[in-house]
Image (cartoon, rainbow, N blue to C red):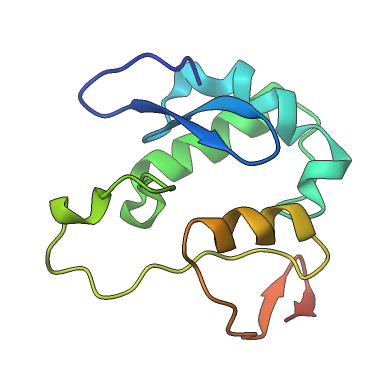
Length: 127
């Protein structure tokens, strides 16, 4: 993700243990190189809903799939009052692997609460 501010992509600073910029917005096919940086890393994919990507073509197919599905729309996280744009919104869910403590902490700092629902991820059950 390029971090440029456009109508559909915004940049914010999120402070966890250090400051960094995170760009949230809909995927574009041009994001494939940035996506490959972390989608090819086993340490990342173990906590995601996919197996580690091994080819750019497979990543492009996945991004193309994401572009076509409305539920992949990204939202702001952090302290910024983003939900005013969606007054009808009743619930936001953040899914994270039970062993991914760093991501759990990020969600907690953003105001999420643990519920402990069981899901199926890469063929195995997780809380």
